[in-house]
Structure formats: structure tokens, C-alpha cells
Length: 119
Image (cartoon, rainbow, N blue to C red; front, side):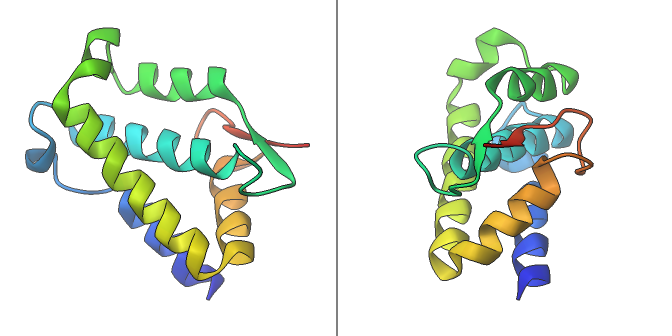
């Protein structure tokens, strides 16, 4: 089950760029990953971790996301889609969701910048 959730979270970061207007695949992936990490690491969703806001900005900057893009409808659509996937996966199995997000966004995760830290 944990591998399924991990795969679902990774695939949530990989929609086609055409669905998000002017955003590239890399930018879409960065926005989705930052959104999923933010969800996992705030409001005690995953109680043993917290979200590192500065790292999420670095992930998006590395993807070439400019500040003016944050207000675009396309950006909002990507955030909404990622949040809905994260909510669904967390409700299905909170423990597996938290473990999967820790593996993706914690130390040694898939990204250059660590967006989740242990409390």
C-alpha cells in the first residue's frame, strides 16, 4: 500500500503541461510537489514533521517559476489538483501518506531541497 501511495504522489506531480497553460512540465512538477509537501507538513496532518517554506520557494525558483506566475489561473489550477490528490491519499491511509511524503520530501528525498523536517 505504501508503494501505491508513493507512486500516486509522484504521478500527481507529472501531468501534461498543456493542462496548465504556459507552465512547463518542470514547473508543474515543482508546484505540485511544494503543494503536497505543504499539505503534509502543516496543520498537524503528518504530526511528526513540519513544512520548510524556504525550501519550497527554492524548489519553485529552480523550476523557473517567477513571482508573477503565482497569481495565474494555471498556477492555481495546479495547486488545486495537487491538494485534492494529497487530501484523497491522506484520507485513504494517513500513516502511509505521511511515510510516503517523508520519503519524497524529507532528508535524502527526491528533490534537491528538503521540504519536510522532523519535529
